[in-house]
Image (cartoon, rainbow, N blue to C red; front, side, top):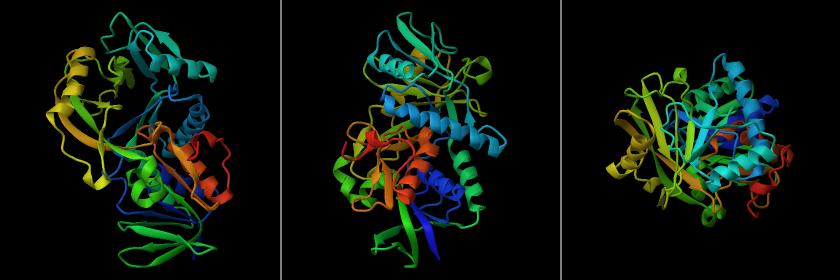
Length: 368
């Protein structure tokens, strides 16, 4: 069988690329060296923040509009919220450039936001600014992937090849994918590569454009703090005086509040060399933040490591593979890609299959 599309890498973006192809009525083969959802890459950790106000640039506004509409569709299909539209709060020292840039982007893009003087559950300093983003919220990471993958697997013409590395080559007409353990081959008319933190190995031409960073996620007991959704506690993102970004989520069903750092990761040479152990110095960053901003929160009870694949400017890289209009890739998501997964999955599918995408992604080209 010759598939219309082969998707290599079934993390968040690859999973939604398969979904997009199946929705178009295409035959699609998905490949992953592991059995997703898994914790080997960047698509794990229970929850991901979704935010509509973006200091990173106005070119994210069409992406987030597209993604939120798609998340609503996923919720409708699942029959329950996987994207929780709770709203989200952002706070920073007064006139902080990151928050000011995010506000300007939202206002210029016609996105609603509300300036507020307090944030539920947060001890906001008097000289700090805060805004509420009605479109913000959080996404259930593993549950969403499992649901979307299961739904796609039920579609006619969709196949998944898991637990085995794959190589690929173009023979001038078709893409030939070779499974390394079995040496069996699959052929496809087009190719979408969604490599996550394996980008430098899978797409060697990106090696000089990407770097890996080690970041950590932490869960604390809610204690006596008002950190539940019912108490108005929402996902948040805080810009600190030293340039660090800290984000967090309401207490989960186990009474644990997830808090993580976003900016000051430690560089790693390769995904195999990412240190998966968590140290007191990792926890101290979060413990200090919690002590300052979340009154009476309990101790950190568990932690996890999450690798980021960073581009030089922190923006995504979305483009065709060199020399091929029927092959595309998404890489360098820089720790903020999951919220866009439905949009990015559709875009990489359109680039690979149709040669162009409905949304303008010129700002994300490799040669920008």
